[in-house]
Length: 355
Ligand code: 2P0
Figure 1: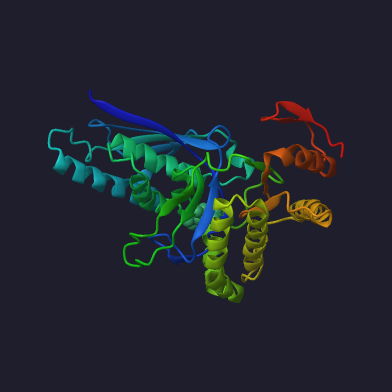
Figure 2: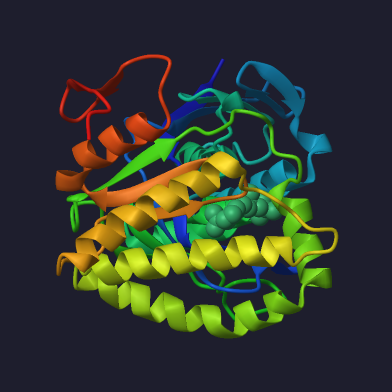
């Protein structure tokens, strides 16, 4: 029996300029461009194996051990069919290659972080799915333009997934093609080696499943929020400025724009009818701690030393140069006592709340 399979991993990404709103629901075309940082593969990622053979009778996915019928899931199916079409073109071009495009697939996907941790897994999940199918089907992957092309398929699984195909700093261009979405793709702004001094601290505030899903929440925002209309007209300016800040390694501006955009996204969520509250009191207290930390630095003639950002949930991500991280973790532990001592995975030492 001829069996072909491919296994890949894709990491989680955290946006500095948030994606919130679709102009086309079925093609997943955004109302604004966005920009994110892809986290290191070692910590938060999805690992996916795609396998195909002539004997399989249906397309199946096991997501963290739970079986899902792909044909009943619109987004999974769209992603798979798009990849199959590309394989068909490949088989037409190379007639001696095995004709596997018609065979059913079995896919197994696992996250190396608890699904219940309140961290978005659809981005890493659909990125790993598209990437593993591209390997399975021998599609070109050697050039950044190939990965950008693949991002068109990952995007149709979950919008933010297109950004997880690249490491480092990644832009999702909104594109202009409303008919096919052929130019709404991810492009790399700078790779993961460009600014390695920037670290991300993820603060799990709550592991509850969020009340309003991103998909439903952003649709409601598009329909009801007046503030959202302001946002989509101005967010591109912020994106241009943050890209410049990244390329200049200007952390102060990067931090300012990241925090402004997080605040504006949550303001827009609150301006939705009925309102959406993603942050809670602890989230707001973390904003207070980071704001005070930056205020003290600026008052002493320095610059911003950390940036918070919050997605569609209460958990915080704090970006900061690695040299500030020990201080930041100490502060967080002091204000938000932890049940277990915190061991920094980079410094490999236990940090106490001693500031
Ligand atoms: C982002 N989020 O840019 C923003 C910030 C949440 C807040 O991308 O409907 O799960 O699958 O395209 O990708 C969450 O949106 O939504 C998201 P769909 P997705 O990271």
